[in-house]
Image 1 (tube, rainbow, N blue to C red):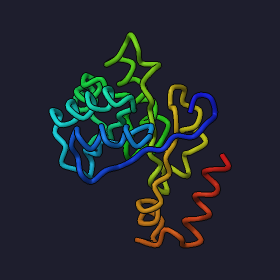
Image 2 (cartoon, one colour; image 1 turned 30 degrees about the vertical axis):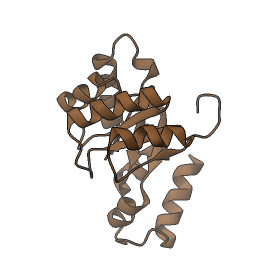
Image 3 (tube, rainbow, N blue to C red; image 1 turned 45 degrees about the vertical axis):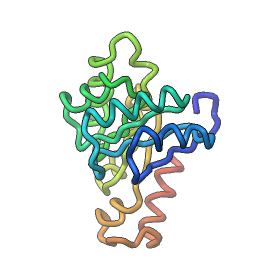
Image 4 (cartoon, rainbow, N blue to C red; image 1 turned 90 degrees about the horizontal axis):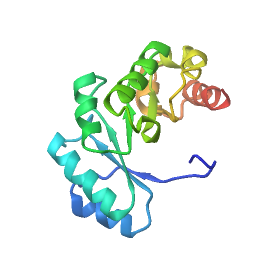
Length: 170
């Protein structure tokens, strides 16, 4: 990604170290360890991150929510990145950057920080969010965005597509 290329991030429902190793063998670049919608514990994240390192792929964690202690525990598992839900404004984007810098002072620049843009508020605040130094990538979650815009489960509603297109253009 840092060279302008693409990477495939897989979000497996079957959360085991063996599955992570298998994904690496298949040639995928990264795996998302979903603690927001999944059942992973910190110990599970640690085991799967270790399997990702052994397989030569990146482990990206989506935490339950943005909380310094929780995110620090995941970062202590030596994950490669954090995908933070519900980034609403520049202050919340800066908060995650500060958490990563605090938790990984020697190598924070190597940790990918993905800000999830999921609400109408985040879309409105996107120009300021984009100015926050340290965010590696932005993920616009159309499902949650459709709910926030008043069109639940209508990911292809014209208003959702317009918001998505506007975000991508920015």
